[in-house]
Length: 189
Image (cartoon, rainbow, N blue to C red):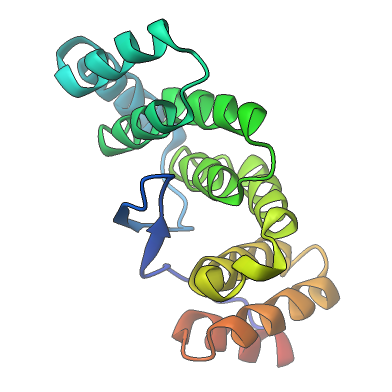
């Protein structure tokens, strides 16, 4: 079987209760984890000490810890600052408050992916897929396609049959995704 190394193109990450959208770049390439951890820690420290948006949102949440909208904005602000650890922690708080709100799991997966924590990213994408309600599928097609692609990509060596199932679902939601097409072809060869 031919294994291909793939970079994932920019995808649409539907964020939040407020309906805001932001673009993110998700990659599955390997990097030096020590450098990533050091950079993430340095960025997180800088973001925590000098980001007025984060500081204001934290104060708002202190006043009302169950304010899902403020938590969502805070998680998004942490992501913008590349503070992946705090972003994940905040998305998890939202998942506790709103366990049926799929975007929180997708965002957790994205943050785990940026931390190069592929196992937890895969689990979060699986939870996202399981949480999307039938009436929400249409508006979540791109994210579902990516989630299935990511799972297929991560399973291509350990369980090629499952990877084929997942890549077929990915292509069902987005038949134009060139990376998914390439992975499907690689799995079929």
